[in-house]
Length: 184
Image 1 (cartoon, rainbow, N blue to C red):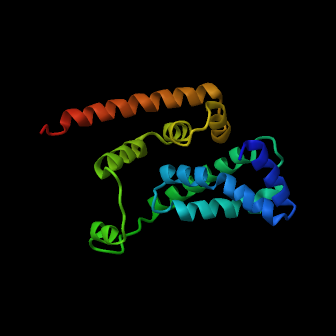
Image 2: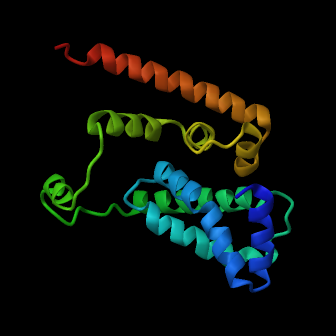
Image 3: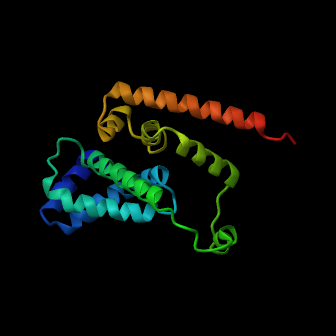
């Protein structure tokens, strides 16, 4: 579904068209979930996706179409993730199980190369928030620089600079970790 179709579905959904609301969700859900997985964590991405849609549908009557509905929705998602991160920083949630690794394995959790995935996610998480957002939106989610600038509400050149600096930081961090890793 392209941006024009998603935007048309959003306008129709605002008028009460349930089928259009389903098309709007279907056209945006995968990218939205992926963004929220990176901006927060995969474990809460489902909940944050739901929260984003709740906020979006509550505000849909005010959507004016000055930007594509997908960009509008991703901007809402960015705020939902930021709100979530502020909340967990104020009130850390303790693990519900003693051995979370065993619990995850029993529930069928599988990641192709857990060490690398965890390390990369950790490095991305450690980026400055603005650089992380720009990097994830463009390099992980696949938005254009212009679209990311719209979501982040900043200039195109600012997004380019943030992505460039994020890449530099990530490259340096990966090289440093490779130097520290035991050979064998």
